[in-house]
Length: 328
Length: 138
Image 1 (cartoon, rainbow over the protein chains, first blue to last red):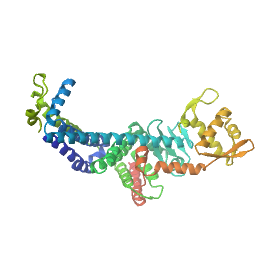
Image 2: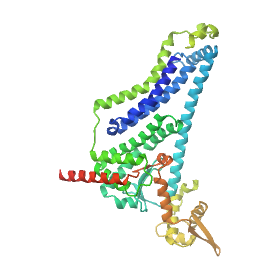
Image 3: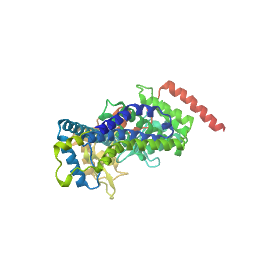
Image 4: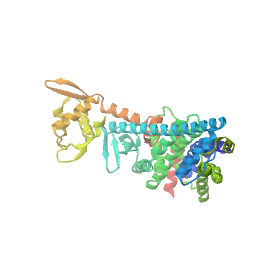
């Protein structure tokens, strides 16, 4: 019971205080890839903690054993003991419901988001094929259209799309920068990262932590691609391309994306700010530690329960006297 | 529609290509013609560069008709086909789909840039020009 509460409390902490702090931090702009990893450590750990919390309610003390049969047997014993008194049974039910509901919701929303994105891409790719001309020299397809635009279509049969409007607007260096940026998206499988983070947000829309994580992952994916493009083209060329393509058309509805894009330009003009090694190491350590906490919390009591004899002389556990022992 | 990208030996000469590419070439001919055309004319228009069989072109034209991208009217024993939308409208619609700011779009594809506020863009442009001058000076 205490373990379960600790796990659920930890998840709550990860989803309330931590995201706001991480979103306010300055270092992610200097190390976007590390920051993306940190966001997934945070959200993944929160989900794992809730799942582990549900399990902890269900099976108060389970012996950790390499032998699966024995582990299952001890689970059965512990469950029987738990069921022997009504409070325990209710707790088991609640724990099982919580773990199953969270697992099912996350899985369903992720599968749905992946399928929907794949469908949208496939449809777009089919329609695109009618008006796009491959340009092997650029490694992109060209669409004759007056509006300046560039984007990538990830997934199977991935491609980079550039309009003639964009080619007229950009100089050679800027075009190279745009292509390098889009290639970085494709290479880094950024669409999957964005989809996963978005699926968690869609699964639990009332949890602000997931929404912040989803916005930040999308923003950091752009910064990461900008950094990759800086290797192929000058950072000022990327900034120029962003301004040329982003300001080409009057802003109809300017959302958070527009503000984030302005910040991207500013970051490219200001030049690279490096993250110190100690900073990077401490972030990585924190992320690993955050991810390990639910495991340790769950394993601690399990390990301490190793010595307990669930199954004296191979007979099934006698329910009544054992009940007090197991329900905590 | 699954048939759009089925890969097969479509062209004489043994090139393995997709119907999708032929669809694009046919729509290109129809749009270029600017008037209702016979399948035979489309086929002839494709001839110098590609040599698809007439029946293949006929099949793909019928696929495009069923997809709603072509409409047709009787002309004697044959049909004359024309595009249901102009190339410009089709492209504008497609690019609009790619660049609209919806959550679905965000997950499906990654646009290079959104829309930057004009006032902010002017300020950034000044900053960029100054940075470029400093770079050139140094």
